[in-house]
Length: 386
Image (cartoon, rainbow, N blue to C red):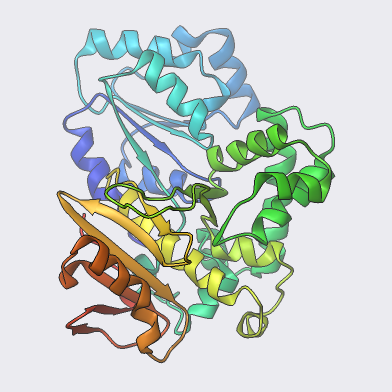
């Protein structure tokens, strides 16, 4: 088993909080993680129809079978359990009682907010990170391999064809998750919508343009994007505007959590096709930003990420605040460092007086350097200050 970064934070939380909740996309490794992190806990999954019916019809009896600790997988199927869990943890006053997982972010958050506020530590688990695979047999030497394969654990654990597995993943996702969350009358239109989103990964989104392309309304585009966000298919990067006196773009940029899924939806069927694909730069940007997201989530942190672009096309791919310091990140897929790679960072430094220590170029080559105008970091060693 590949050791997951999040495991040590789960163990720490189990000593201080009665409930731990983990959400994330399907097949990101949540079940394997919790079973290995808490091997002595009884385990039930509400994917099992008989277990789900028991939990629905007699939630109190279901929970009272395991009053000293229990893992409940895919709890979003029986949200009624949250209130009963609250009663038990308030009576027991014991930490580490329940470990919960869910694949729908908003379903889990709704239960936590309504019933378990102040009693739960909430974490998010994404697929493998590049760093988690760095010292494993699954390490890939070229970043195009990660962009093509993606980083869902099952592809690596079972040595599966990414094209075959991702095709099944999308089919299952649409037929199960989308049907459960939203009454989509035409699933083929929704599948077309996901493919259009893949074609816009790493780009500022135009909701009206997407709607016009497949014949759905602006409001439907917004609703469907929220579904993709809640089920960890995409995330949106909002524009950063604090302390800037230039006009900026107001729409967010769209990214896929898994670059392999984006590649599959774009019709890429071999790793070599990435090298000549017109979206190679955007796919590399998607890969790096998803790695940054994983570092944040898998450390139990909540650090908002932004991008910045003004009307004169000055741009920085990623900005975040670390205390009172602004950190700027530029992302380039090229393997040879060019001075032009630093144009956005130099402009940010001029605009905000940001220290060179907090300016980073993440690129497709192997060098790690510190220069007077910023830090050069290889895609192999993506780390951010948390």
